[in-house]
Image 1: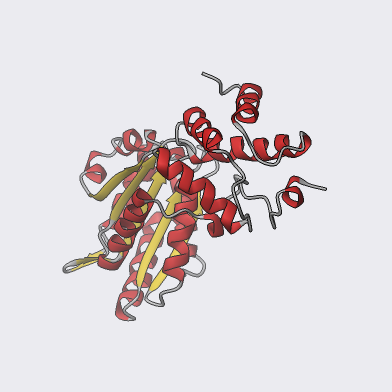
Image 2: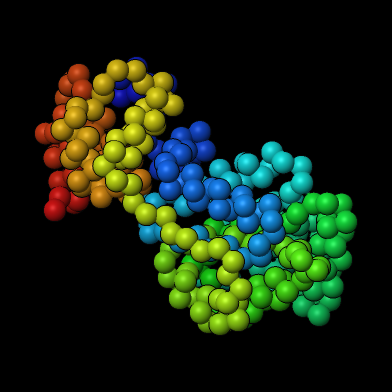
Length: 272
């Protein structure tokens, strides 16, 4: 038997792997979604979303992508930066492929006309090109941000031809300053914060419900302790809850109590 079976769950509710089914639409996440969708609808150009580690940036990005995919007016893509050695030329070609440019040229002088031609084609078809870049804090060279500025300079009267959403940790804000003219082109910038106590409890209950949970699985004191030790960071909430469910199962407890949370956070090195 697994802890899922023990607590009558259909699946693990607190995996840290991004799964949009478990997306919790907190007030701030709802506002963030509205800001990004507004930028896409009005083709604002450059949007920057910041957030500390584990605040749900990636899950929100995937949820935004789902929304855009459901609307035929958008040609959308999501790129995830996995390391900091990415070159400007590699990234430009990746973006080119994502918006539908076939056989993108290696030389920038030939690639930029391809961008303009493709973006104008989409404009004439009344479509909008939106590129989301997650983990954009991995982008650390002035050359990359200069290239972004060049793409954002492609426009028609009253409208940008491309909207870019850069998503990353707070250091992204400093990285963008490598190219001051690009920094001045930021149309919308906001930061995801950690969840407050009530939002933390709602988040936990939401994920349990999605996983098929019924009844009270965490005691009130346990929920307070989870908020205390996680600081309202979704990733830490998931880690604590997942370990607590396993511990409760191994101890054959009917619910997760505060003693279990204390043991788990101590084992995880989160005790303050």
